Amino acid sequence: MRIVSWNVNGLRAAMQKGFEDWMAEETADVICLQETKLQADQIPASLNPPPGGESHWCHAEKKGYSGVAMLVKGARPRSVQVGLGQRRYDEEGRVLVADYGRFLLVNGYFPSGSAGPERVEYKLDFYRDLTAWLAERRQEGRGLIVVGDLNTAREEIDLARPAANRDTSGFMPIEREALERLLDVGFVDTFRLFEPEGGHYSWWSQRGGSRERNVGWRIDYVLVSDDLRDAVRGATIHPNVLGSDHCPVSVDLAL
Image (cartoon, rainbow, N blue to C red; front, side, top):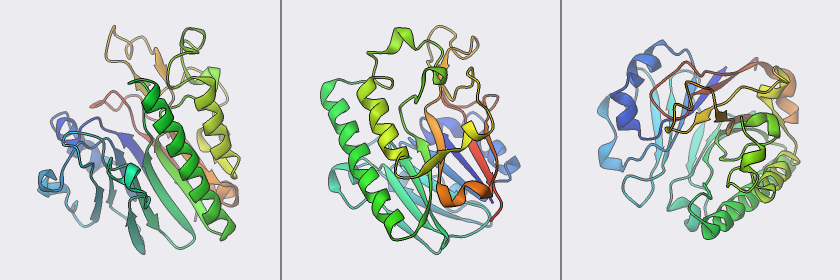
């Protein structure tokens, strides 16, 4: 099974930059998108559902903001839960959960704290509450795969300029601690199973030629619960795929 995750920074904008051509060539069973920036009546007909597949959407109440989606091309989930069940997060369209029996696939668009202290607090609350929800599912014996834009670089090797960004949301100690508490539920950062070195990023500022100079951050992840670790066959970042300020990340599993 192949799962791809991509923050498209506006799906309609990405479609004008070759998204459908990329999707036609991509062999993923499931493509998880974040920051779709769509309302229900704005979903492109060609993706609702994609050819031969099915689609699932979670919208923000605010127009042109947030939102996540799952475009299923291969293995179909048994069911899909829209939202986390907490209004303060669901009104921002941040979570979809697909039940595949052996595991739950959680597609999350974690909040950014860049707008100021109140949003940092909201981000930390989201981390805390989602971590608690994930811990409950692990106690029930469910396998878990969490994908998405986590909006936090885990370690110094996960951004090009760590020293200059210690007080920047996305790399503040309190945010990194929240990410570690989530991982402590019993998750593996799949990319680090295969690549221990730095210099690999999934997001670049749109200013100053950051992408061309590879001055970026790794804030998009695929995490799997410990019971699925041995099923992971590959995990990749795809920086050559354009169309957003983020690039796709993927995992291949033998299930």
